[in-house]
Image (cartoon, helix red, strand yellow):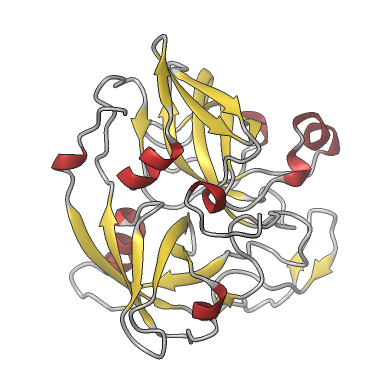
Length: 296
């Protein structure tokens, strides 16, 4: 077992509502090939796209798996402060509980955090999603912010419930953290989300427009919920390119048609000194790790 400071972490409630899908004023999106398209995007209850499903190949743009949450309560002192708290304090693997509507009392798991739109995505079983409706409220037991690896301080941890860390079961071997991942991703193809001053919320995107790179790294079969290692990427204090560094994150939304965008990745581990050793494991997906699905 890794030694952590989990006994010093605060577990606190945050709440959001199931948010409606969003369509922009323009309606059409212009693809990287110059084609105008109309496609489903962020928000809503996505009945047939969950963690474990392909991240690519859908007639979609930025679609979020499972159920998308947002906090829309206005606060005069801190505009959008409660929605920001929902996104920053929620961690991958946190327990989510429906607290209103026909699905009241049902439980799910946080599986993603999407930047820009600032949604938190929760996986529920299909029969629960059938009972949910837009504006149902979901409370999350936010737990994980401030998590540290006591024996490997050169690896920073973000956005992760301690229980999910234990389920991943990474090991320290010869001063490196060995973490299972499905794919290696070169930092050169990371796009939207670069330039953020922190990675405590949101994600950044793997752009898949160069066919040669996609084939070289086998990225055509990326799945929602996959753990992936971004090579030469340092997420310690925002998202930057740094040779020798490694970031491991989780794929949180589908592929995109817009230039600079693609499947989104929320950071889980990062080391500017390269003290992370990715171990390829095709089963390194949250749906398998937390046994959210039995059909994979």
